[in-house]
Structures are given as structure tokens and as C-alpha cells.
Image (tube, rainbow, N blue to C red; front, side, top):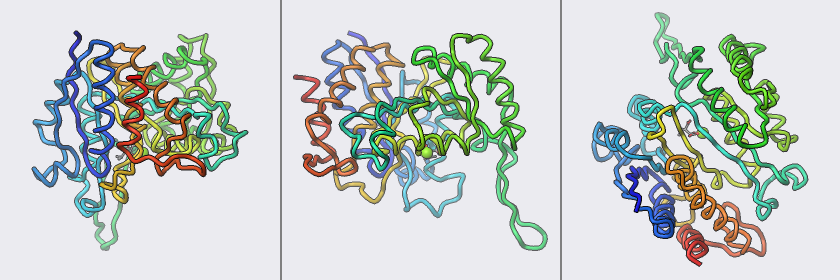
Length: 361
Ligand code: IPM
Ligand code: MG
């Protein structure tokens, strides 16, 4: 029996509901593949602010650092929006990414044939789309200094954020991009704004240099504005996209809409230390539907599947979860966000239970 310690951080809003379903699924696959997932649950984000006055306590950070992997739900909500940036729920997420050294965020966007009509885009545009956004996660605008808002002598204010990347930071994310492309269709598109931003001019230069070690991977470059357009014009052209933090944040939300719902997209955040990784849906805490039991747990369930694959080398178990999700969709079960005429509406827990049943059956 293999044992894995998982730090479970449900967070805010729909976080606890969706994480609850993912945990049930993990438990079931664990049984099937003789693995035990020992979950240590802790508060993070707004829930932690309410309990301890800050979004991430040292204790919880320690739990995350000591775990074999972290499963996170979502953080944030209107209740905490008035707070200073330094203690907002989102800080917990940024601190976890930084402290765990998770510089690479993998966000796969795959179109399930079953959901083609759930997307706002035309079926012929999205059919067969299977792309992966590799988002740099611990640099760029999110972390660069100087940053902040200052009051000028004339009483007006001045806000600053800095987009900064060093050669080693670009090299390591580029390598991740090439490595994952190598395991897929061997196409890597590096997205930058090299026609305007010096930082990303450096980005392009370094990516080209790293690419010399990957002659089997076809490398292309695209400006981020063009990429935003191409993603809805012809998403089928993409295999792996590698890009800086903010661009990746925006493009991955856009990519999620190809799949019909942001409630479908999982993510894995990894670094150079294989024992450190965090898995979370790419969507937020959805405070408007929190507590109603109608959230889509699939993104979190698929995030758990990514955990099994990337952190625990349990490929077969991971595939099994993905197949189970596919089958449930094929049977016509839909949460509200992907509901279509003629399908069967499922609550969050009904969707989770249906995936469980497929797994066990
Ligand atoms: C994401 C989210 C986060 C981000 C927020 C909640 C801080 O949008 O994971 O994409 O901006 O990275
Ligand atoms: Mg985002």
C-alpha cells in the first residue's frame, strides 16, 4: 500500500463543495490501486482571514510544504474585497505558489465531443481541440517590483506593477514547455509581446535558445493579442502554448470557453522539486452560486487526476478518472454551467456521485 500525504485546502465559496467531490473520487481510486491518500485539511483564503486574520498562516504553509501534493479549491469573495491587497484571500494562492516554488502552471483545455454544443463557439471551430497552456506562475507582473500605489505631492495617485523576467526564469519555464510538447504533438507556441515589451523580447530570445536542445519540437512565436484572436478563430492550430504569468492567466480563461465552461478546466502547478505541487481548478470561488450545491466539480476532479499522474506516477488511475468523467458526460449528465436541452441536470454532489459510480462499476 502506497501512502501519500495530501494537503487539502478547500478555501472559499464553492471550494469546499467541489473539493469534497474530488476527495471522494480520490478515495475510490486509491482503493482500486492500493494507494492511500492521507488528507490534512486546512483553512486558506477568506476562510483563514475570518479565523486567523490572514489568508495563509505559517502553520498551513508548513502543512503544504510538508505534503506530497496540495489540492486547492478556490479563494476569494466579495466579503474580503475591501481589504488591503497584502491580506486579500488571493495572496494565499500567490504565496503558496511562490513558497512552494511552483513556477509552471499546466492548464489543459480539451473539448469533449459531448460538450461541443455547450460552447458559445461553432462546433466546426472547436471540434477536436486539445491544447495545453503552460503559464509561468511565480514571476512577471504578479511578483515584479517596484509595485504599489503612492500618493504624489499634488494629491493624485500613481500605481505601479513591474513585468520582470530573468534568463533563468525564462529558461526553466521554456524547458517545461518543450518537455510537455515532446510528450504531445510536438508543437510549442511561445506567446509574448516582443514588438513592444523588452521583457518579452528577452523571453523570445531565451525560448529560441532553449529550443536548440529540442530540435524535434516545432517552435513558433505569437504576439499575445494575436494569440487571443487565434484562440477563438482557429484553436485547433495549438498544441502547447508557453507564456508569461499575466498573459497565461488571461489566455487560459479564454481557452476554457472553448470547452463550454470554465468549470471543466483543471490545472497542475509544478516546480523543479517533484515533491512539491499544487492542483486546482482554474476557476474561482464563484460566490454567487456558493452553498447552492450546483457548482461543477469536474475541474477539481480532473485536477485530482492530474495529481495522480504528475505527483504520484499513477497514470492508469489518472486515466481511469478521465474516462469516468467522459462516460458521465456521454450519459447526458450536466451541471448547470454546461446544461443543454434534453440533458439531465445534476447537482454538484450528483455529478460527483456519478463519476464515482463509473469508477467503481
Ligand atoms: C488563476 C486565478 C488567480 C490568478 C487569482 C485568483 C489570484 O485567476 O489561478 O488563474 O490570477 O492567478
Ligand atoms: Mg485566472
